[in-house]
Amino acid sequence: MRKLNSFNYKLLTRLMFLAMLLFVAAPGFAQSDASSVDDALAKLPGIKIIHKKVTESPFKAEYQLAIKQPVDHNDTTKGFFYQQLRLIHRDFSKPMVMETEGYSGRPGGNELEKILHCNDIDVEFRYFNKSKPEPLDWQYATFEQATADLHHINQLFRTLYQSKWISTGISRGGETALTYRYFYPDDVDATVPYVAPMPNDIEDKRIYNFLDTAGGAEVAAKIKKAQIFMLQHEKELLDKQSAYAQKQKYNTLGGIGAAFEYEIMEYPFSFWQISNIDPKDIPTGDNVEDYYKHLMKVFGEDVSGFSDEKSVNPYLPHSYMTFQTGYYKYNLKPFKAYLHYLKGPNPSAAFLPASLPRRPYDPEFEKKINAWLYKSGNKILYIYGGRDTWTACKAEYGPSVDAKTFIVPGANHYVARIKSMSPAMQQEFAAALEQMTGLKADMGVLK
Image 1 (cartoon, rainbow, N blue to C red):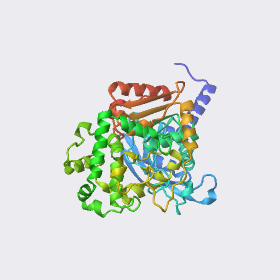
Image 2: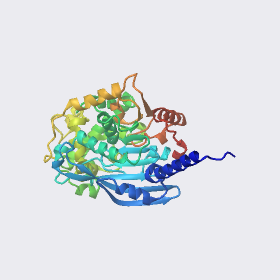
Image 3: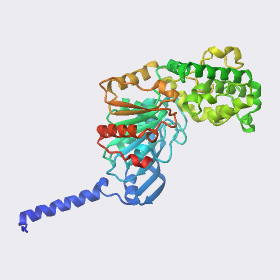
Image 4: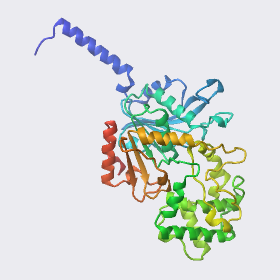
């Protein structure tokens, strides 16, 4: 065995000392207990730990956090608020998945965090749930401000998590992830949006085309016939509403009768978007009870789902912000003879009370996002459902863009997930993810 001379020994000693310093100083090299995570989070400015849960084998720490955000990122004199985050920590050296919500935050992690065995941050959208400034100044409920929230979180947590970052989101959360990429294209290494609608108008006509053709002409006619029957038997169906539904407030939509008509207008959209009902099971007879049970299966509840408490107030920021994103409306023309409450031009499916006026639609906002995705939206893996109405408004990209779309056959808005893909599609997805990020996915955890 060769002996070390004095110079080599000193050099080796110094290298070992430097390695020890790096081991202690850099969070990416030593992560086996929650106290080290607590210490690291405590050093981040503007972060509060609300509560945490720790499991030891394998190590995982889940934190509910709040981060101080400017109400206006362009002018901090307008004040601050605390935005809610949920952090799942495994190791500082592992990748980070950033869930960009469109509504309130969610517990429990996501598929990407599981298949990559990595860290995860879930970000509640500003103005939702507990992430509200006081007073609630609606002029700052914009995607420019919301994506600036995400950028601040990314830059702050990147000081701790320096590996790959992947953004993801579901539905409006997926739309948020794509809009975030437009404003801050270098914040993440790849994006995986689920069932993300990217409307091209405040009344996206692609929805009407989908509803007129989904399942074929015979099914579309069957659905329309069912709508007409239910409108013709409005009183009988309203009489069947639960006591709970009867007690709800429907001021925004104009009363329970108007809420019922909105439900019938929404029915074909939701039939394809959120139900798994076979078209052959749509009622065709004249038994009102059959139609009531059918509506309950589609919506999971009766007309109470269109009340102020359930359909309006919890989603005010979303409905307000459709002036930027576009949305869909209800085509009243085929049903005018049967409607008692819905009159005039086609009403929006995004409900706003009179106290919060709808802002004029800005077509340029979503146009520039969609144009960027088409020309420059690289390293994006889109997931859509073959049955989901919102797939009619899926994002598009050009032939030279490094992106890929996975449409899960027969899957609705809630089922279009990696775990619902066929084994072959899962492997194709995993290969595309690895090509974009260099990260290998463990699909076995989804079984």
